[in-house]
Image 1 (cartoon, rainbow, N blue to C red):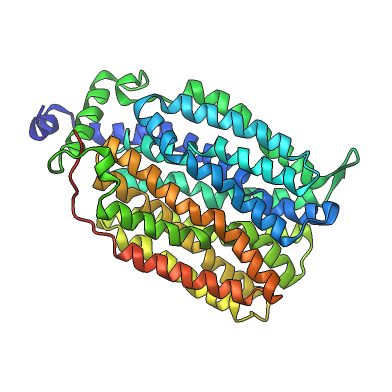
Image 2 (image 1 turned 180 degrees about the horizontal axis):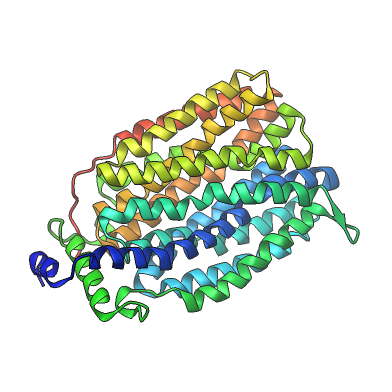
Length: 433
């Protein structure tokens, strides 16, 4: 059915109702899953405060523990994305969640640095397929015109995970129950939801529109046709292995390599930096820690909506990064009050709002199987820097005795990432058949 015939065949309002129904069915659920994922991935930032008191772990131990997660995480990105494309999203996502939930529970038993390293390494392997898998999964359901907004809605779970998780984590680590330290209970409290939601995912998610019995046959046919038209709007076919060597994909990978350190240094080190800069209690730390992420959530929603409205990606991905650069520079100059410190951390957090628009680019430049491989490659190469950066941040802090040098280093890296993001060629690329 051609595009004109398709438009004539559907009643007025049918398209919007179908798009909204898909969004309401999938996005809130995926949003919740990503909250659980991000709380699980970054809980070490708060647990570190209690672990340093009980186990005497140094900054370098936590830096390596945070970074080693990405050694296994990045190794399995491409296989995870391709499994979602070629096999089943609900099976891959469900299995990943159940596995990482059980591993998080076991992390609460660590006693030595090497046990922490081992726990984080296997946790990275368990989580590897989740994020690239969901990005590819969204391309199975949402047209190009809706994709940045859908991705923004999904990825706004990143700041919300901290808005929810920071006060809870601050409260948990400040208490002891049954003779067990609060940081150990933190891992228990964050592992159980992943296991339960992983089981629900298997039955709730639908792999493809054609399999969605919660849509009418006419709606399923319309969605499949619109997605087919999106796929065919490019030029001649290109194999996935060639697509991931194309210039846009390589530039995207380089940009993500430079963008990631700022985000992950902030998420892992923000609790410790704020506590040492401001000297607040664990409970107040959790409450104040939510403020930058509320601003990030709002920025992510506005940025994704405006990007789709303007049909522009590069500036919407780069401007939040430039705001974060200003925040990093301000922090490196040594803010003199708690209020200014929170404002600067908020500017840093706004940089995370770029990621949803950023990841809408590869699925628009390439078709499904090529985009699946490209998202995996971009995520893999980008997470190499995520592996290194938390440890290097701790190393520079230990060598210099202050946060000044590592904060300047992060600002320079983030600025480079913004420049690379602006350099991404956005012309339509050859697509695979």
